[in-house]
Length: 390
Image 1 (cartoon, rainbow, N blue to C red):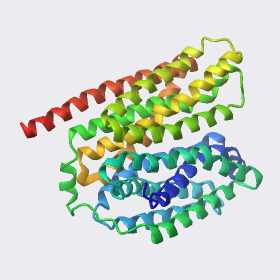
Image 2 (image 1 turned 90 degrees about the vertical axis):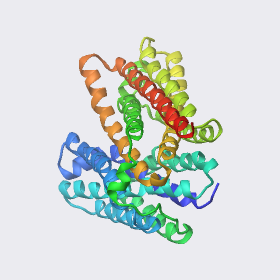
Image 3 (image 1 turned 30 degrees about the horizontal axis):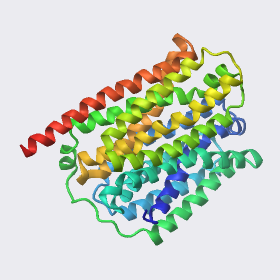
Image 4 (image 1 turned 90 degrees about the horizontal axis):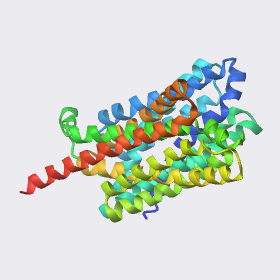
């Protein structure tokens, strides 16, 4: 694997850290800023919405700008936003700096995926994408706990200082180690959007529906697991999930290169649906050692297909329009964050009309819908390819 990918992974890692760490800091921010927990939670919402809007918007407007320069500028803006987050004195200013950080992240993430695919041969593209996406998982498994620990030992402001320092290191690394990467042929925005066809749109819907299903369960995983096991502190289960997610990224990349993106994505969605449904089935057990063991097994397994589908899906999207990979990946990143936001909303709706025990089943149904939709999309894409050569 090209060693230059490591600096891109570092950038994605610290973006993932910044995204996930805020949840662990909400009580401290709430107290210092004199706002409720619910109001403080809107910082997460602001980040997700800004990212979802910013990724396709900037990905389209900046198509003809130098890739390396954009990586440097966006990560520098991200570092500055987090530096400002560490010193602001009002909730309103913190809200604005979170939006600025999200917009910078929305530029950097799809660019990093585009650059990773350009730095390796086509046959290794799946591995390269999984390597980059593993950075987000490491932000969940390692970065967020470090940032939360800093926030608890010192103040929540030091968590943003940590993010800012690593971001500045990433800027230097990109400047020194990343080569100049050739951009796609210069086209107008209208010409680029012509290549954004129905198959790409439907594949992005697969991303949104599948992510919504996964984050329906992840958002409410604490009450789900506590209800099954009677264990209040679920940190060990989240660590197991993180390990599975990290492994899933790597396995997904490996199988994308070996058996192809479509087969890998189908297997991932099918396995993911089964494991999500397992959380509802496990709620039938009485709290016991056996229940804890079963939840532990499901916790480590569900991250594998859940994150294994990401490199396959992004590799499939690139194959649909390789000349405009950056634009396609920016919309993919946006779809991911839309799914994250919808997961919390839909999961909350399921709980309000039934109970938390039905969230797993609801998640499974959505992921199965994503699987059926992708099966249709893949058949349509294959027919179009055959018609070109017939």
